Image (cartoon, rainbow, N blue to C red; front, top):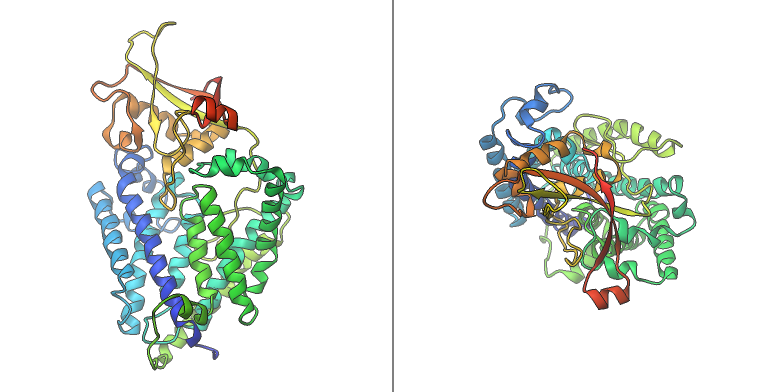
Length: 469
């Protein structure tokens, strides 16, 4: 491994590129399926209204120059098809310059979507995909060695992702320090999955072990990424296993999966060769001089941009999931600095009665992922991202998170708006729109083993009252 190339990571690059293309594919598919109801011309927070008040320099995007639902759909479908081609390896044998251009396309397309996605695209895994996707542009085709500086940049992303998340926990909720956060987290996380009920029912000593292991993984292991092999591979495998545990226990869109994807770049080629029946070329071409210069320039830019996230890491006022530049490069990350102890859910109901009274029958709207019907088992959606369901979790924490989109959602439901209804699992008014809709707040908790056996319900809920909209 010399100053510019890392031949031993040829197969690591291949695994990373294929896996990243799969994440891109999921992200673009989600955009295709959800944009009309959320950010389309008649969506809850329309893009035209947003770009009219936010200039290009603050949100660089193709949609600053032109927007229509048809154009957005074309961009998103292009992203789907382009990502599928990358999954199939259609860019692997291109010349270096062509490979770089091919990988720049999905990055530019997805950055354009994120920049106008507003609250629906405000999650840390969106900026993470943009940052990682940008670095992927410079990894090059399979015919040349991977650039060492780009690999180091990806390890730097993984370090900030893990170490930042670890610090925000230590500086945040006391339960991270006394190892009790997982007494609550599996039950109160944004979107439980089919195994979350079982994780919540683990003995408390196991929950404490989970938290302690998380601290080691996030506060110690990241430093090992910059040590020689095989230590670096061991560190990457620990990260992959830890993130896999999180995939089993909850729905966090592609956050955990993309973290695992980045970690694959730190796994030595020897391990990949033992696991995968793929042999590198007998001889790789020399890295073009211009390509080496480009990677050096990239590294210099990243060093400069790293000032702000490093300052944030050492600050006692550390913030999570923040970008310091409009291109979403070299961001700061983190999750669950505080843990909610009680789960609340906003339940939306409608009625056909023109004048609601004491005997009015209210019918519930069912969402795809978030808890509703207490007898419905939580489902697995990750790495797919249900954006409306995630925002409903935030709305249950505070009405401040529900503005301005929740009042708009209720108005759309009163009109039986097709793009918005497509975001839901069940519309109780399939033929005529309701005369009235309302939002109510419930306290949810997982049933215990006896309740689960006697009632078949996964949840128990208690009405708190009407939700202010």
